[in-house]
Amino acid sequence: RERRGGLGPFRSCGVAEGVAGAGMRLKDLQSLLQDCRPFEEPKVELEQYTTRPHIAAHILHAIDNSFEGFSDTTVVDLGCGAGALGIGAAILGGHVIGIDIDDDAIAIAQENVVELNPWEDEDLCVDFVRANVLELQPGMVERLKADIVMTNPPFGTRAKGVDMEFLKVASKIATSAVYSLHKTSTRSYIQRHALKVLGFKKAQVVAELRYDLPKTYKFHRKACTDIEVDFWRFQV
Image (cartoon, rainbow, N blue to C red; front, top):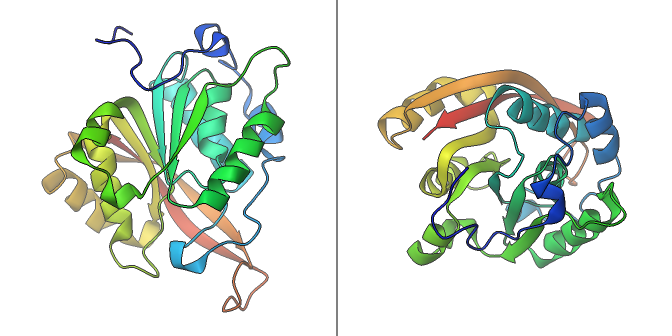
């Protein structure tokens, strides 16, 4: 894949230039991500929920095997949290930048990069930037231009519409496709908004998933709640 000006802010690493984890089996990828350290004290105002290993693995495996693939691909993980998606993409050969507003989340993600790296003699191609996704300056957005944007955004329970704001930012960064998770109950609205307002060429639900959300905050009454979510692919 030829790019004017090379990789820009994306680091060039030996792992990503080779086959890296390309062709990694789903169960092997999920097994690696099982060891991803979650949030220690999740912040309710940020709607922080760790992306479950089986969900992250299915998303990454689908992108790697059915769509663009990650080998030598530039990737931005918006609202990266503890880093499962971005680190998984790097394991599969991507050049990744994760963006999050929370210093604590980035610190955990940086530890996860070291702990989840399956290679002894190569670093994973992933860096992190502390920034508010919703307040990225135009110049920053332009510098972050990437083949793929992935995001598991806040669902908007605390701040209505924030999931659509994440998708809007993603649409300005991605040059090929955006992959995102959204509640199944919002499917028709998201389809319409993505095509008519955000200008995506195509919006498709790749898979219907069950997000098994463990009790995270005091207001959660159940030990675990299943939330129906759609895994979307938006073509730029």
